[in-house]
Length: 193
Image (cartoon, rainbow, N blue to C red; front, side):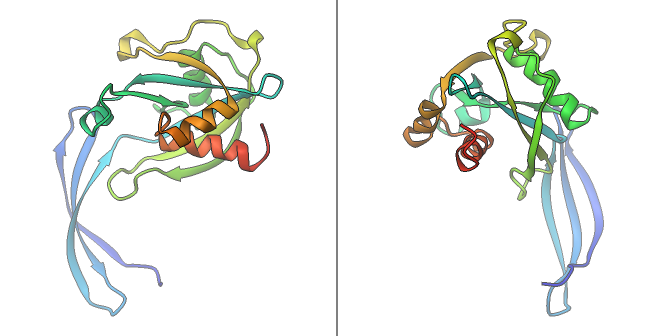
């Protein structure tokens, strides 16, 4: 497929309450050369970073559990979701962001992270690129309880799980978060744990 020619005709802001929901009307040139007018909505919440902490000596990983309204609306009866530590970049570079988020959410102060890839998580409707990291942790790195920031309304539970248990939780449906599944599978595929 050749490069598609796009010409944006109009962008409307539908909502700017939490993040920005835009309606974009554009012309797109199809493969046969014809031009078609289309309209799509895109949710712009900024880019983010996610990390999976692992410990080779104990065979464990650090995950979090917190309430996620969209999952509650879509059938998760408790609304609680187990996931890897993550956050929005907020004008930071991805590495600085994930170090800050790790300390805020988990209480672990890490200095060395490894970027493994980046991915669009829901490209049909959300603009976000997520930067994926892994890092080794040890109990000596635990400097606080974690739990997130009160001013951001975060109430995060920190979980230390055996890696094999975390993998079983994917199969059982206890872990349903895509970014977390991707990171756990990365550790498995690369034989890191």
